[in-house]
Image (tube, rainbow, N blue to C red; front, side, top):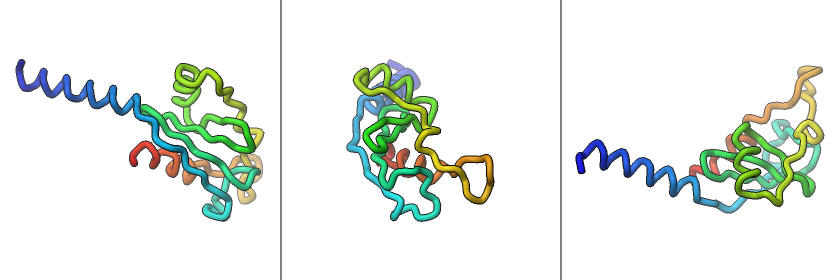
Length: 115
């Protein structure tokens, strides 16, 4: 087998292993994020699986945090129903008519996938 083909196989295997890896969720809170906390609830449990599919459990309901999550959850967790994030997502107090920044929470969720 040629070196480029062997390298290609190694990449495919690494991606397959990463896609099957399930890491434990992390619970975060408004106390940890302060003014950057984007949700109405005080805590959220963050999940990241496979190719960076991230979602949160907030007050017993599940919400997608990125576009990959609904597909991933539907295929691998058929018992989970993802709800509309708008119902728990705070308005940005500094910019009327907009929502709070999800970036810091999304970064924390993605950190789960990256160990």
